Structure formats: structure tokens, C-alpha cells
Image (cartoon, rainbow, N blue to C red; front, side, top):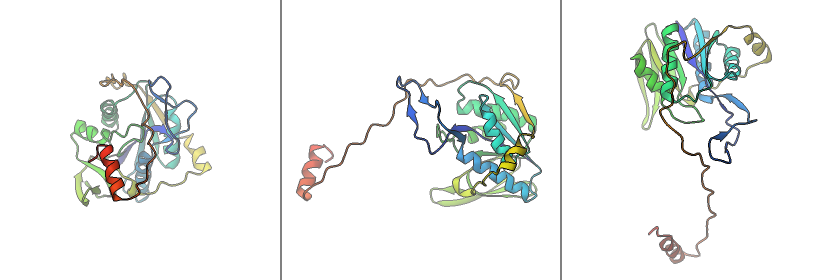
Length: 248
């Protein structure tokens, strides 16, 4: 059984993101980058499933510029067997990402596709759902527990009212949530070994996928600075202030 795991290079979650002075984009110059935390959980889950003897091969895939190789090497160091890099400098929207992942999946024919539930840069939470639709495959989103059986995956997913358990026929698309696991710490020997693992290069053109943008960003802006609060002497004063602010 083969697992395909998608990983994305994003700004490290500890970094405070700033907007460029002209409002044209987010400034990521000289900013620390890392693997998307939800994707890291997906890689960890794939490695655990392999260690449990449930899957035989893990293929990590990333889409983007040349520096995405660093993210793929991290996935390889965590335990992925090989990697596929679809190299492009284009800004990829969720639908384009889903189409590229489908093209890779058509080549690799995995039985399970693992993705983070969302990327922390755009917070779209769309790619896994779109990929499942394009593949016409079952999906289990926000997975908090995954159990692989012979021909199906049993996924316990988080919902507003608690949790629900789904049985998905394979191949299936699963997106991972925070409580699924805690990713392992990668040691130096594993990083060195990852450099020897195969990394295949592809392009959107080779996969016959159109990645043209469908949405145009007009302007980026930081949230407005929150104003300081004021104290009310008593209930009457509070009511007066609320009326002045036209809240009541």
C-alpha cells in the first residue's frame, strides 16, 4: 500500500507576518520558512502507519519554487521514501494545487492521500476537499484518528458536536487535524540520509495542468490596531458609554 503526502513550504508559525509597504503582498524576504504544521502531522501519520506495517511506501510531494526542496528533504528525513517536486514560480490557488496533486496521484496510484487540513498562510481549507472531488474518491477531513484496514480507512474526525467515525473505501483522501499526533524531532543522521533519497522533478506543463490564477488580490492590509479600552465607574456610566458608541 502506498501513501502520497502533500507538504507545503510556509512562513514559520513563530514569525509575525508583515505586509509590504505598497500593500502588494506579504513580505517574506529574509523570513524563516518551514513545513506547514498540519502537513508535518500528515507526514508523521504516514510514517507511523508504515512503522505499523500498514503501508509500504511514502511519497512526499510539494508544489512551488526551488526552495520547496528543503521542505521535501525534511519530509524525507522524517521517514518518507521518496519525493516529487512540481516546480513552478506561479502563485497556486487551491484548485490549481488540487489539479496538480491529482495529476501526481494519477501517476503514483496511491491507496491513501494525506494532506494537512489547511495551510497556515492562506487558511483556505479547500485543497483536500477539491482533490477528493477531482479523484471521485471518499474523503475524511479533520482526522483525529486513522486506522487502516485491508480495503478501507476508518477515520475519526472532529466536528462541532464532538466527533464522528467514517469508514472510507480506498483509495481515499484524508486531511489531518492537530490532535492526530505529535510530529517527531528529526535528528542530524536522518537529515544526512534524506539527501541520498530520490527526489523527482516535474513541471505543471509536463503534467498538462493549467495553473492560471482565477482570483486577483487587489490589496493586502494588516488588521487595524485595537484601541485601548475604557473603564466605567458604574452601570449608569457603562450604559452612557454604550449609547455614545451606538451599541445600544
